[in-house]
Length: 187
Image (cartoon, rainbow, N blue to C red; front, side, top):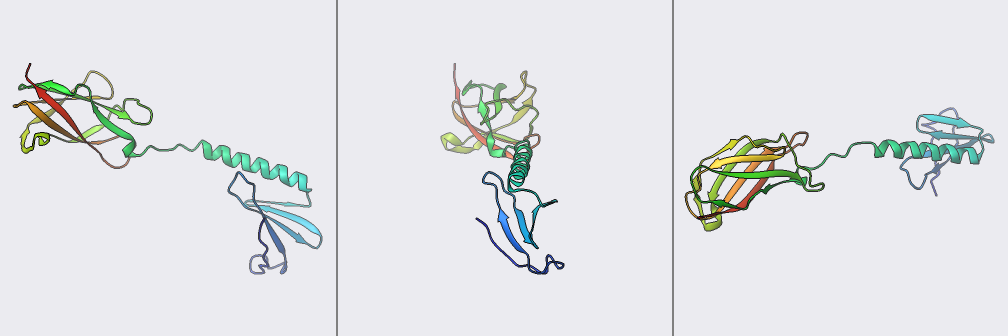
């Protein structure tokens, strides 16, 4: 379960050392055990242990591996920009001037709302009905709940409208881009 090498360039004072790599099954580290002049020397990156028993070596390797795993598991894992999405709060809106369209930004993995995103692009048009050139002015207005974003727009015709949003999510790299389809109905 390892390799052997004679590396005089690495160990110039002991030209013919026999090295055996030891690898713990659940960790990603390498320890070298050398036998030179009858003395066992164990080298773990950053440490050298001389003349210790195999049982002690195994315990030291296990402790070092457990510490490595504990450190690795506490490293925060960042989400990807694709882990977020905008969702329409109400997919049907009255066809009128000055209507409000509200969306929420959520983390798809946890379902938690994501506050404080910066909306950098917004557009509303009638692309679902084949009239992409028919666009309306859209303005962001304050929302009353964290993770919710409101827009005021004029939905001048009944039918399908596409809301295109671009946003920067705090702590993430890249830009979130979503296209949502809503329906303007006359009530």
